[in-house]
Length: 155
Image (cartoon, rainbow, N blue to C red; front, top):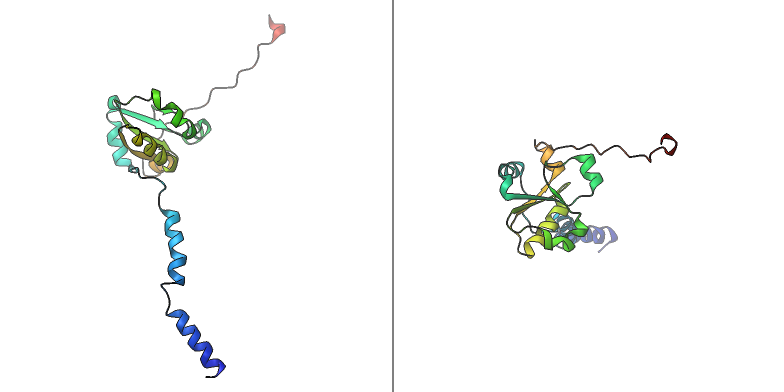
């Protein structure tokens, strides 16, 4: 067999092995897009339906205050940053349906899983930016103006 035939045979053999090289390259990409949580991600319509009954609902926003100020959120919520949620379980009411909220539902999904594992009734997770992109309306709150020390010479 000459060198050219050997190269063509090798190339053909390699091309006919898609289950090894091609599949190995595809699997990590698919896993990277899989959510890191089990909670249901609420659609805009599902969240709007829940918001119609505020007397039975508790929104837990797990974002930082600067994210809430910059992006907006829902009109009434309990703000507990994701890292503080585990330590706050004792004072979260268990008699309400809970929706967790973050920017795109990733942190909210993990928070929803944590709450569910501790017996809370969780409807799902939502993303504020996703909700707005899908036509939902966010509430924006302006931070208060910084306070300055009183001028001692004015007294």
